[in-house]
Amino acid sequence: MGERHKFFFGSASAMLAEELQKRGLPIDRLHKSSLSAEWRREHGMAAIVDKAYEYYKAHEDEFDGMIVGSLRHPGEADRIHELGGKMIWVDADPKVRYQRITKNAHARGRAGEDDKTYEEFLAEQEREMHPVGDEATLNMSGVKEKSDIFLDNNGDYIDDFKNYSEKKLGFTVDDKI
Image (tube, rainbow, N blue to C red; front, side, top):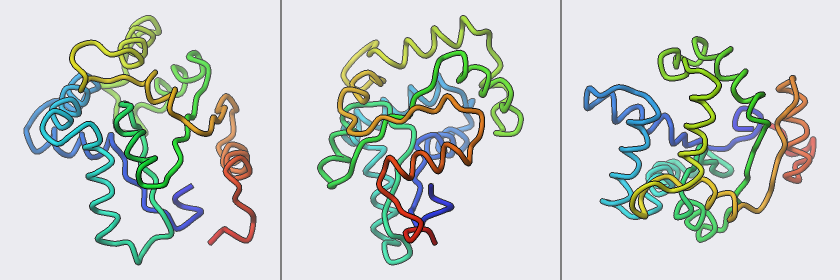
């Protein structure tokens, strides 16, 4: 959506990876999860959204809006709502998601992170859906519960998904840049 519209895209995964790299730590899901919980404990439950919003506000005149991707905590969903935004839950069948990550791991620069068995993938997904630990840990089921719009992403063609999502989100051809 960001490349077809003039939105700032704040990627939670990219923010976390950048900080892990600065610290000389592995850039994998476990370390990203740990770091995001650390940020929530230190800066509040919406730390990821707040970091993206800070950048967006400083460059607001360059964009028509903001998208923050890969949110994994209900506090982040709450902040999106406080800012007047909508939470969008994009989902696909677990087998489809697994095939995509294993097929595209090298292209996305995540070969080591995404090399896992299907059973490991499912266990990881389950861990991220339900909190394990204090209130700052991942809780994607809480994000899903707070979502306003649900998009199905089981198809094989990215352009079809982009067109489908634009229609579901209320964009028209005139909105394209």
